[in-house]
Image 1 (cartoon, one colour):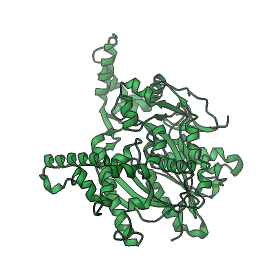
Image 2 (cartoon, rainbow, N blue to C red):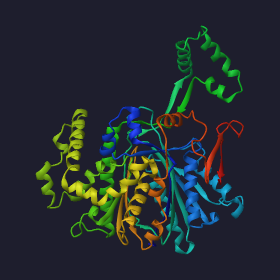
Image 3 (cartoon, one colour):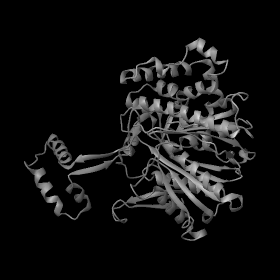
Image 4 (tube, rainbow, N blue to C red):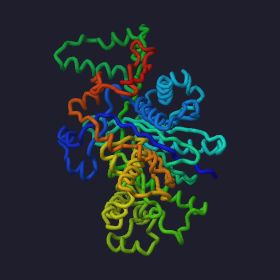
Length: 517
C-alpha cells in the first residue's frame, strides 16, 4: 500500500478572545475550577464579519499560499463541520466561491470548477470522517496520478448564554493537505470504529405553533406597558395567507420550524458515551492491528505505550484525560503490572453484578464513572497523561472548543510543542482518538515523517495566539446575541461576510469577499 497522509496543516483562529478569568467574573463561576480543573485559559470568539465559511476559507487559503498550490490541481475539498450555514447548500460551496474570488487574477475565474466539494456532518467527528474518506480517494488514484485533496474544518462552538456548556465555547477553522509521500504524517489504513445511536448532544429542528409564538410576543408587549387589542392574534393569523412576503408565508403555516446553533445536551451522559465509544473503537483498532500483523499483544508492549503521543478530541483542554481511563484499562488490565492498580483502587465494576433493570443499569454507569475518577488519579495514569497527552492540551487551553477541528488543533499543539522543545519525533507513531456525539469514535495512528520539522517550523500557532485581542464581557455578549453588526477589529488579509440576503440576492443568500488590507 502506498504511503499517504498529511503533508501540511493550516489552523485559523479568530483574533478575538475572551479570557476565562473575565468569563468567570461575568457568570460568578469558580475560576480555579475552570482553570486548574478543566484547563481553560481563553475562548476564541468570531468577530461580526466571521462565520464557519470564512474561517474555513481562510485556513484553506493559508494552506494554498504556504505550499504554492495551483487551485486547479485540487481534486477534492471535503469540509467537516457541525456549523453548517444552510439546510441544503453545503458550506463547502461558500468556501469554494471565496477561494475562486481570491485566485481569479492568477488562475482564472473558475479555478476550482472541477473540484469535488461536500460537507460531512457527524457532530465533532466530521473532520475525521472527511480525513478518512480523503485518504481513500488519494490512495485510489495511485502514486502516478498524485492526487491532491484538502480536508477543511470550521466550526463555532456556541452554547446558550448562562448554560452549563458556555465555558466550553470556542471557534476556528483549519485545512489539511492530503498527498502521497507526505512530509508530516503517514496514516496507516487501520481504523477502529464504534457507532452507537444515542442522544447525548444534538441540534434539533424545533416546531413552535405560530399562535403560541404570537401570544408570547404580545405578552411581552403588555408587560412593557403597551396595550394589545383583543383578538389581534386571530386578525393577524387570518390575514397572513394573503401575503406574498416569504417571512409572512412562514407564519401562514400552523407551526414554524426553527434551528438553533446552540445544542441540546446532557453533559454527564455525553461523557459516558465518549468514554465508552473510545474504548470500543480502541478495542476494534486493536483487533484489526493484530489481524494485519502490525501488532502482537503477546510480545509487543501495550499500544498506548507504542504511541509517543495521544491526540484526542478536546471539547475542553482536560477532557481527554477524563475520557481515556477506559482505554487505558483495556490496554493494560491483562498485564502483571495492572495488579498494582487493583491493589490501589480495586477491580473495575462488572455489569453482571448489577440488576438488568433501568435502576441497575444506572447504578452500574455511576459505578463506572466513579472507577474512572479513581483510575484517573492513580500515579500510573497521571504519568501516562504527562508523557502522552499533556502537549496536546496546550492550544486547546487558549482556544477552547473547535468541534470538528479540536483533534487537529491538538495535533498541531503536539507537533509545535515538540518542535520548540527540540524533541525529534521522526519515525515515532502518534495515536488518534476522535469522537462525535450521536455517537461515533474512530481510532487510528500515524507515523511522523522525516521532514516534519520543516513543515512544523512554519506553523507559528502559539505565536499567533499570543497576538490576539482580548474583549470584555459586553462585547462578548453582543457578538453572541448577534446584535453587533460592526466588526471589533478591522479585517485584514482575510475573507469577510458582507451580508445575508437584504438586497444581496435571494432571502438567506450569503455573500463574501477577500479583504487585502
